[in-house]
Image (cartoon, rainbow, N blue to C red):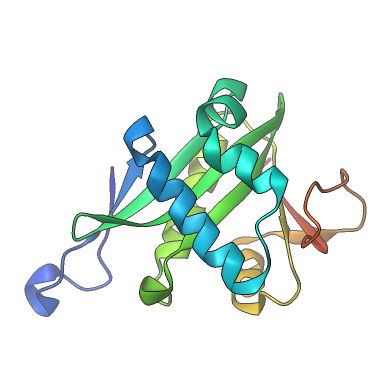
Length: 168
């Protein structure tokens, strides 16, 4: 478990953000958060529902991992590491509920996912996004992701940009 302490709880009176590892009891939260952000900007696609309805099968059993962010006892953010091959993971299904955006939770999740990828021996971290998601793209670039011009075909209609981070 990780803690995000932008300010100490004594100063703000607010609880800290905790990062948790996925357990089956969080499946509804994983789905809720992702559907919320996808429906805000795009539409939920069949490929989304496969992963969101069956994260054990489509993420965990394939060697991936899911992280969640909790605040005041409620799951407010999530991201997944989907194993692509022996040395690559995809950072996907990243979502922070609207009322908690702008507090560094997305960065915390992304940094934890990068650290997890490194601990797993990954050499490359890949992600797909959309160019209209400027704050997300800004974060990814700050973290060290760079645009790639050729990657695997995306299962998502909304994906119009691919990025990668080399971890070696």
